[in-house]
Amino acid sequence: RAAGAEGERCLETLLTTPATREELSCLPAEAPAIIYFTSGSPAKPKGVTHSRASYGATLASLAQAMEYAPGERLMVGCSLSHAAASMYGLAGLSLGVTLVVATESDNHALEALLHHRQPNLLLMLPAPLMGLMHDRDLNPADFADVRLCLSGGDKVPLQLQRDFKTAVGFSIDACLRMSECGVATLSPPSGEN
Image 1 (cartoon, rainbow, N blue to C red):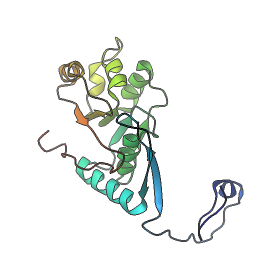
Image 2 (cartoon, rainbow, N blue to C red):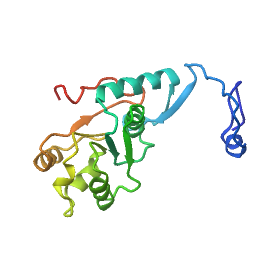
Image 3 (cartoon, rainbow, N blue to C red):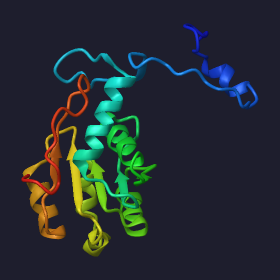
């Protein structure tokens, strides 16, 4: 799209303009930062715009609540276009967490990432996590470094909770959120779940 307000530039121009040492103007806190689209499960899907201030506050509170530590590895088993994946991922990156993103969601690709990247944190939708837990090639030892597994977006089935706890030794933390507000409340992993 064409440039709009002062300081805004269109993507096409940025991609074709040679790099300079020009100082970029700072956008106001109320300027749009990101748009998430709701699933439409309760009603018609809609785009929800977060301002720089609201998104920054969401990421900061999420980073603190998740108790991320620099050097940890967060494996995201879904697209970063998924609101939770981008929020948890960006919050982790802000504190020096390595983000491991699955480019495929089949069991073998997820198992290979789990085995080779040895994440400390997992974030996956319930269906791919269920597939991973029932993959015959899965080695429960690949979960040795995992301290926290988050799953949500859909209801986490009781059987998945049971299978995960049997294989790994702790429960999945179910996360539910609304695109309209980001993550409104979160119990830190060290707290009561």
